[in-house]
Length: 199
Image 1 (spheres, rainbow, N blue to C red):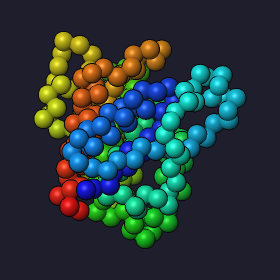
Image 2 (cartoon, one colour; image 1 turned 90 degrees about the horizontal axis):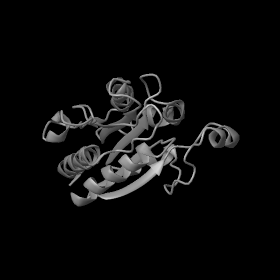
Image 3 (cartoon, one colour; image 1 turned 90 degrees about the vertical axis):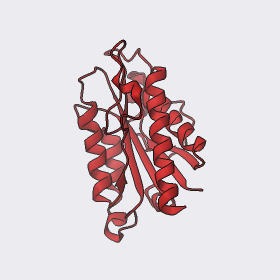
Image 4 (tube, rainbow, N blue to C red; image 1 turned 180 degrees about the vertical axis):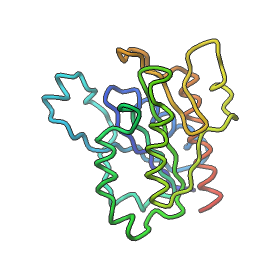
């Protein structure tokens, strides 16, 4: 049974919901899954005044525990077309793992959200994936076996590079069932890939 970590950062709950769906898909494929989040870096007063979702159940991850997993799928919202500073700060603390090659050959993937359909989802996925590749990880995206990302009858997320969702300019749109299905599918694929490599 592969051991998978869903590692995320979520300001308003959109990525938290996607993380739960990724975990659901991975568990359905037989993986043991932990969901953890990276530490918040803004002061509590700033988080409160900006209405951040501060009641998230997932425990805080540490860099040192990453080598314990066969697969790590990383989610975060876009910040101007790239990963947010909270996630970047977490990865910046992982230089020791990089130096030791501690994550070489492990399976990785990314998922994200943006305010609009063209608000940087794909570049944010690549900003996350670039980090994972530097750690020597094997990347699994969201292929078109998730047919939902090809729908044109409603706004949907999804890209070959990873699951995505559209939050709306005011953050009022939570992930749709199609978006969550994409996240579940990616979780399933990553779990199955890890099982083949580490089974």
